[in-house]
Length: 172
Image 1 (spheres, rainbow, N blue to C red):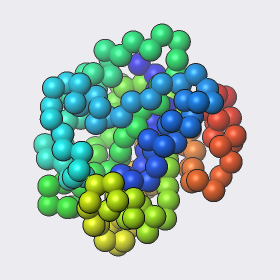
Image 2: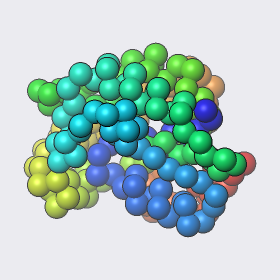
Image 3: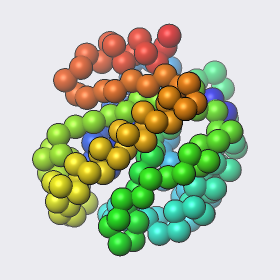
């Protein structure tokens, strides 16, 4: 199934952006976490640490293939890097995304202090600015590398850029 991958670390604003996009164009959105839950796995939404990373990646890929979107585009909210159970930054192997139909990548970034405040407010988790910066840097590097290696267009977005530019990227 063809989709646009919306990449960014937890708390960056991906869900909010997806809601804005859905109000502007014919696009549906779902997160990789939602697909994993659809597969029957319970995920704790208050912690961003992930156990059994490789098994989770297989679960979402199977669920993605079962989606019926009609004529809508799909925006898939996910990550190129995760925090493992010990808070180590873990880049996902690119084989995770093989044969999934990714057509474009939107990397969403924000200031680490803004992300820290959002995660503290939303999830009651206090991550260090340093960890969030390293995680966001890893996410960006992986998005750029995947984009280059697979000849997939990449758009780097932050909330200061006009939404109209992002809409052009998605629809053209």
